Amino acid sequence: YYEWLKYSPLPIHHRYESMNAHHLRKQLRQQRLRLSKRHRNRAAYQARRSLNRLQHPALTGKNVKIGIFLDAFGEMPTQPLMDWARQRGYRIYLPVVTGKHQPLVFIEFTQKTWRQSRLPRHPLGMRQPEQGKMVKVAALDVLFMPLVAADRLGNRMGMGGGYYDRTLATAPHRPFRLGIAHSFQYIDQPIIRQKWDQPLDSLLT
Image (cartoon, rainbow, N blue to C red):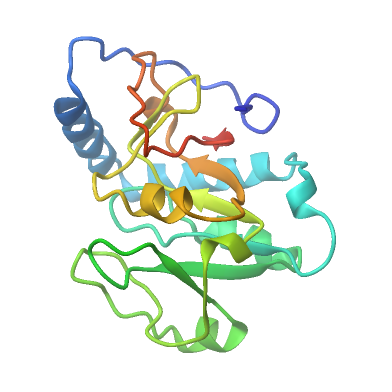
């Protein structure tokens, strides 16, 4: 099930029909990296306003747990989205890579960690907590997912490491999966879904 119109402004489909997956990923990553800091920040705050219209059972009740990544590769900044979650009393969890072929685990990003900002950079390039109690993805209610491209059926093209697909594939409970992207990453070209690929439930642009 894939629904995004309810939650985000209608983005423009971009056409890349002549490209295979490798070249498409490369072009979109380069296009994303060329964005100015001002453009990325504006996109993040627009996305945050769209989140105010997000209504889903996973966001109701007490002790809602939100998994969200820290931007590192030209994605829209996730700090405004984390502020949105914190203002609503949600608990924020950051993904942690523990091994090349291991599923992600998640560590709570508490107020103490927020103030101390002890987030060393992983060799792959992203920042992640160095200590804290780890939980598995099944403990989360909502998972914000990075992506390079997404199509109208919710198929997601990631960075190529397969971490999110591997993490969700074996989870006994799968959180509501919300993709985060710039509008040009929402494309007309169908993304071929492999049997291990994990689709999105919704897309926020």
